Length: 268
Image 1 (cartoon, one colour):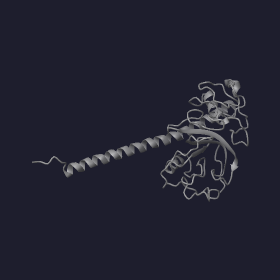
Image 2: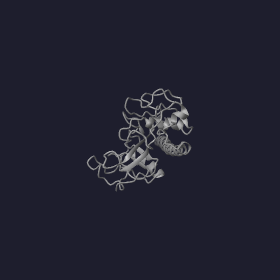
Image 3: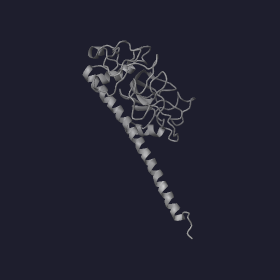
């Protein structure tokens, strides 16, 4: 009588099929991730193009524009300390100094949030944004006051760090006059919670820039698990030009930064 069990050949075929299916799932997931990363680069290029077009049209930086209300009406409260209704053009003016507060030495204008509102009002951006922080201080919320990317919960925040930043545990040396950070929501600041693994950040950096976390127009915040050899002890002295991504780290530990105003320079 024939046994009702599986033969070795049948079991082998089943295992091969399972292996092929598992491999297909992994390849599919990798393709989805690569498509998401490419969409981030597309988003950054679109923002840069839109900013250039805005400057040509209005001779101003979106968010910093001093006569925005003459074009689109005045919001109920300026400076906008509370969120304006979505799908309205009413806005506030910036201070016209060519930078985006905060980060300007005490300026409290909500230019971080007006940046996206002005772009949309000018027909150079997509979506609808409140033009204000979601808290009483300064907080970006993807999909509310800043754009959300195709990666759920990951948004873009525009801001200025005008000084050159030197010997900083969080920032590489540089003059960041117009910066886009790409990260998840973080309390009381830009969307800068790490959202990418070093391999993902390196992949984007290589496609868009020089492939290094501390130089060029595409960088990361300093993170001891994103950058190889970086520690809390050497964070202010590690070689900026020689720093590389720690590709052994698989977790999402990198916040990526794109400088629209050109290469911010290096300290070493």
